[in-house]
Image (cartoon, rainbow, N blue to C red; front, side):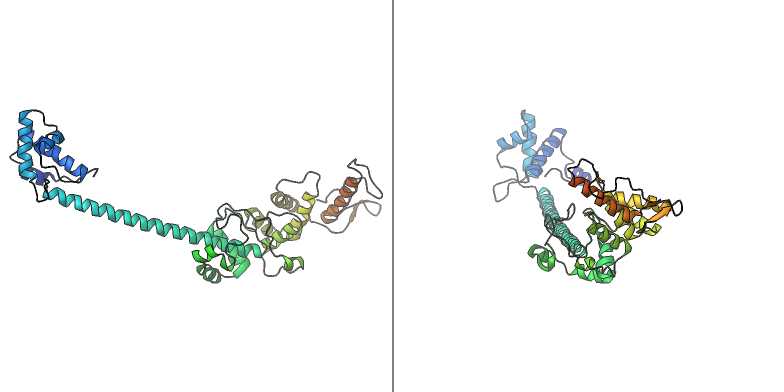
Length: 337
């Protein structure tokens, strides 16, 4: 034991007739008793070593204290009744604390495993809908996405997740662990490039039941932006400001068609589309003219992107020399703002 409880009232009552030297001998023997959690040896020679008794008066004090407070029991060792009780209580307390700690650790490990299984289930359900959440999304954020794009209600999501168990996770049943990089650890997961969400319905133009943010993400992914997040605050703000999913799709296409495309097309497209919308620009799919009947045609954003792609492909076909080939229009196209 690293410590023991000392009751001053009890101690002074029981040792009122001891001298100063005898008090020292008693405490030295008692400290050894608690430290080793075992009774003291019977031989006085060993007690002298334990108490550090070197003089005749020290040894006499040890003998008096040992005979009075540490009598020899049937097992041949010197016991102290109060010390034995305190040691037994301490050992029981330590054992109980260890059991509680072990139980707490087991419960916490099970809770974490269950949480990982439920995160994985939500990731898989959302991926099947063409939604790729941020790997660091919180459970509350994932639940919100799951309600919005999968079940349509908090009750249905909670019911579905309550059926997910650690056993399901370990066996990979119900699609819990399939198609997720790094097993069930979704804390920092990234989309598995070998597992592509089923977007066949989206490809046929059926986007019913989705939020505008979710629809924007699907359209942007179809345009080549493979990293999207329907819960991204900037995207949500853009939709609220009136930027349409089609505008975001066209803007992503424009960015990806540049000779040096943006490193983060998702964020670039949102920022660009919001800036244009705030300035009063609206994407146009038809050509317009400025300056009257004899004015110069200008292209809207969608036509601009298509024409820019055609120009870029023809220039690439001419070994990248930048020389026009055939009917390539050697001019810069401006987007109407």
